[in-house]
Amino acid sequence: MQDKAMKALVDIGVFSPKQANWFNFGCIRVAEEEIAAAIKKHPKKHREAIDGTFKHACCTEMLRAKGSYTLYRAHVRELIERMIAGVDVRPGTKAEVLAMMSGLSFIAPLTREFYAVYVRLFSGIYPQHMAAIGNPDWKREEPWPGRTDELIGELQRKLIDSRGIEPTKKKPKKGASLEVHSQERSRVPSHPQNGHGPRDSGLPRGRGSRPHNGRNQRPVRRAQGNRREPARRRPLD
Image (spheres, rainbow, N blue to C red):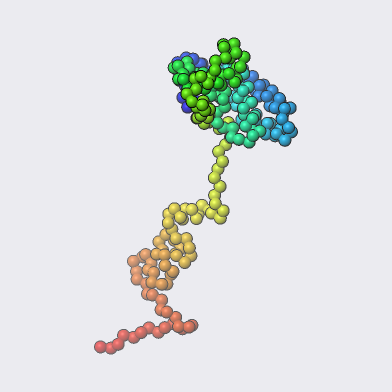
């Protein structure tokens, strides 16, 4: 959803497809400032988690398109809070949701529900600007209590980003091997009592099984002790 929205904004000419690189270098400075401030504010036991925020704080395309350090600063702060709490950092932040909705508002007017979301996020990230324009109450545009929180959660899940986290590979079961799995898929008997290859009949050798070369094989006589049972003679006519 994030890529489609960004592509639509580029197509209509709202943003340039090539943003200036100076913003990326400025974001590195902002991330370092926020991480250093969080280390001083929180106890030492959270320092490792806070330091790990830097590798997840890459500036996404929507934030880069807006070119606002204030917006990116709110993005980093939310990621730091998630790292301290030990929750998933991949869902979109409120700053990313606001950037996406700001871009979509240039394409079409926002509905009543999404306007309430926009006003709430904007007032939280830009309180000084909201106070300058009159500080409208977003709750007046909310259809029912709690609907704005539901929409923000849905948009954050849709704006999920890997943030440099590689997907975990599934480990094979203990004791399993590729040979066993290949035999199970091809349904080839692997037990020594059920044959030794794909052409075996599944019966133990010597118990009436026949080779697959077209020749008959004489069955083995039942043994009595250590001696074989003598062949029975055919009676005379």
